[in-house]
Image (cartoon, rainbow, N blue to C red; front, side):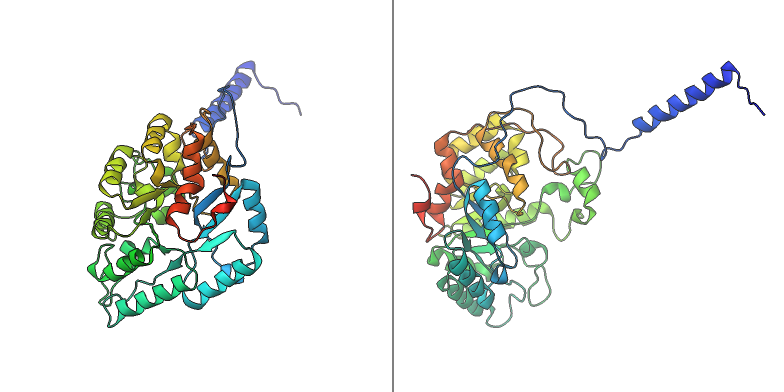
Length: 366
């Protein structure tokens, strides 16, 4: 049996199909929308840093027993001469890590130790902790790494939130100053994690795809309070050098960060995980690097070798409108700062050689 359709019926079916097709396209989610740029401009990708560099914000979590051969091969590809492993732990674990790198990978890694802040306020905590810190430095630790758990999750012996500037922690910071080791500290997270989860939140996509990162306005304290505690602690300890991880979450407000740098000469900043902020304000960021060139250090944070070239390209080139490596971190394009060689050298290695004790400067150019 033959079926016949009128011309009118065919046209109607065709229009229904076209309408459905375009409606579906218009209903594409923001997560799916990721257009290819049609802009044609000079491109200068950088897969290897111009100078050998020190990553002051590295993490190798199983260093006591880890075969780091493949890590070193990737470091060589990137021109990373030295990684600072901030996850050195303490005691026997620290000793095992240091023995591993000294024996098998000399000159390629150094280790920062860590402190367990839980239980502050219990009898003898400060004396015991300071003694262990001294022992860890004696055994080869080159600095102290403080995780964001201080101020967010750590509690004292009574179960109360432990503030970053708690007076009972003073012996730790003072001892670091006496020992001449820097403290690399990560406090809080981006302020957007505390803000309303709505269309005005620049981290909306990150919070949508990583919902556990979202915090309430007072969870466990306002963002401003935690950050202020950190600054208070810096002020109380002018004889201790602090490396403020992630530029202290003020890479999006370099004017205010500059005020802090002027006020707190013992504060240095690392650029780990905030290169997207610098790459969207190249002229302003370049001025900041020029003014504070002696106090900015290279750091990446997570060990993802494929992500380092974005950092190199932002720092070294004058390229325009190139993609960031994680859309959920930054859906905007990057621009290069085109830093001069002398500033690049300071950021890549000279500043780290200056404040981290015992590093071998012979592996780096003058």
